[in-house]
Length: 284
Image 1 (tube, rainbow, N blue to C red):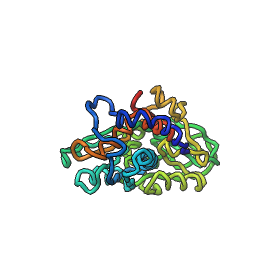
Image 2 (image 1 turned 90 degrees about the vertical axis):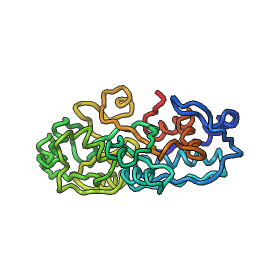
Image 3 (image 1 turned 135 degrees about the vertical axis):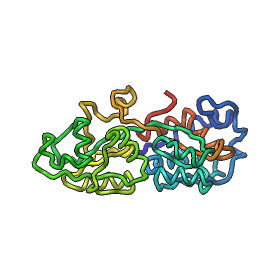
Image 4 (image 1 turned 60 degrees about the vertical axis):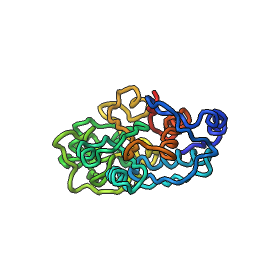
């Protein structure tokens, strides 16, 4: 899925050297840093959805600023909020909205939305079902529909695969697709990352799960919902509505290397990388 970015970065090197890192929307001022002056190390911890694109963005930034090291780790969105709020990490990554309770616990949190991401319902490619209604999705994941024959498929048990509690992808899926009062079945197989969901669904006959758009590949079948395919184009035009923000969070306004990296992400080059990785730009 990852495409080379080195040529893109080389083409814009001169502009970046002259202007510094691009400022995000509605941010005034410059970091005052240049390629020569930037240095140091920061740690980013949290969402496994954000982790792959953050790693690519970190690598691209490090090519421009060889004295900088950006270490990106997973752990889940809730871990990202806590790590940033408690100062255990310089930046947290979160693949959902920040809850009122989290803002109350960590009142200094500042949210930086760097991309938007769709959530797709995915199935074992061997299941001859190409789409579901939203009511069928709710029935399957809550456990009231347990056989593919109930939704136009063969007489085969449905194996529900889900993320664990605290996952940003799970929280967004519950909010955007299941709705209030619908709980994921206690019989669901729980996995700790999008990658594990992909592996489990692709390798388990009759399985169904949900994934970030950034993880979709031909090893699983992405199902249409109410007749709308889960594609970046449909997410961008609003016809596919299961879309959530991908956020970075900091304790207070970032400065130094953290600010420079976030500004780079908002730049045209940073957002081009976001789109290359399968997500939607926040720059329109």
